[in-house]
Image: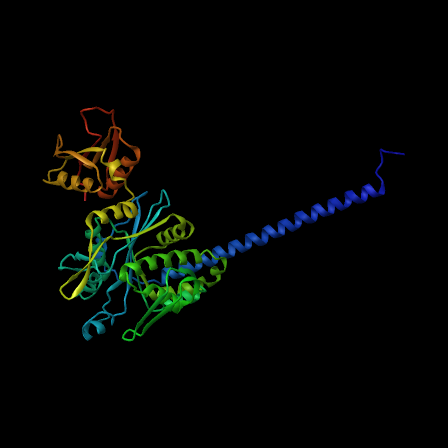
Length: 434
């Protein structure tokens, strides 16, 4: 027997192996090519749809009010005020208001996006919250948008933003304004939304032609049913409705991960441009939308705490000051006041303008830092704000540094050795402090 030569059977097996491997590699390359093409097509559809959406959006935000909002500095959280407007005829007493198309904000949510941690906070503000409205008296916060719209130069979003900034003590970078018209159609275009309805919902209001009848349990709601879900006001009133709205937002974000939604995006973008008004640019919108969809597990929700109270002929939500600050710290600022309090700060005025150090100290204290000294600097001609660090908790210091970048346009940072007799941080206020 000749073992050095291959038999016909051995040759046949080797040939089959070669053909099988070749076929396998060819099939795999074809599969990879098809998969890559599909992913590329999905990405192209999404990009074209988003560009079409952004270009189609109009904004009525007056140029004169551009200073009301500020773009976030690098690394800073992006805060967006979401305004869901009611129909003009709902809750307005005069025909003049209806003809003008003046809208109250039926929904007010501050959405905060942390670019570092990918954390997302949604803070809902009850529409009946009693707060001061800049330039007006204290009333329900949902009136801010309507009062701004009714001015000679309409500025509904601007006045709503000013009110929220003053009430919560935060910065607002952008706004998104929507209305209830077409809500049902948008949900239907998404193919409906799956939601665990937390309770039986039964409510009839012939005046608004609103009839809600939903059963408790997991359901796939169509557009009309989804509208009923978010508008339902049970025994908890507006507070219970806020919880349902937060549940709905999470369900929509989950629905957007469905791969078949990609083919609905062109139609969705066309419909959304009819209902949406914002001052966000394309890049910002893409960034926050991506974060919301793909990091939805990090979403934390909450609402401004308080109590209901009858005042005169109306019912108001009286915010709890301490509880509101805690909610803002957790969901919007992302700060730890106990840790921040250990950072001892001295603030010195390096300008010729009196009171600059006091103003800066007030902003520092708002974030929970301990201001131990307010005084004049060694001279009054500093060109920009200076910050000297001498140790302290890294995370708390980073938060302070990030805030300072938003307050002073040319702030400079340096460090030196720690000393028991010297504060943790020295801030010398320059003319770049806003």
